[in-house]
Image (cartoon, rainbow, N blue to C red; front, side, top):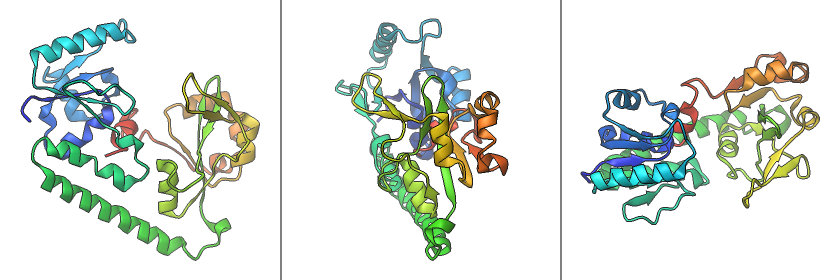
Length: 275
């Protein structure tokens, strides 16, 4: 493929980078503040990456559609990667649904789709094999350390973040592969606290998926004694300042064992987690 790539979501950035095809990313449809890749930021600053975004009217779908159509008219061989929930029936659109896979190893395999555009299947297969081997090795090491431990002695982890106006969103793990964090906990031999059936209130936001939220009292009941708390957002400090009396009752807070996902930057977690 010689016509360049147009991406619409930041998780579509790492696969071309891993394959050495970063420069083939020619356009990004969306708010550039969500890009965490230093090299892609440099390309944007040097006008090597065209950004289709209207900060003065960011939700105007008509403007974005018109600008995208204009770009594709000027770049007739470009391929547009769409997200798993987007319309991907266009002539030069390819749907990327890596986020819909149920296991990490299955997610790795999506790099093969990108590789097929450049006849780099061999490289992709090697990347997948190496990544799978490292993943399975760490799982084996964790199993060796935790297999003989009674369930009550395994590390207990609370996965929760607060959404203003709704409440606390926590892990939902009816099975080990229900979500990526469920698999990671299984992989590491940890006891990840899951929302009990019947606890909390739900919102559907006009769609078919129910999103569950706990009240302060319900979160305290569920996670007060957890050894570790993973807060997968940038809002922990603000929420802590507003709910200090509540959060100081949690063992993980008292022992300074709360971890967010901001180590590589504000938006890197969303961009890199699927790579």
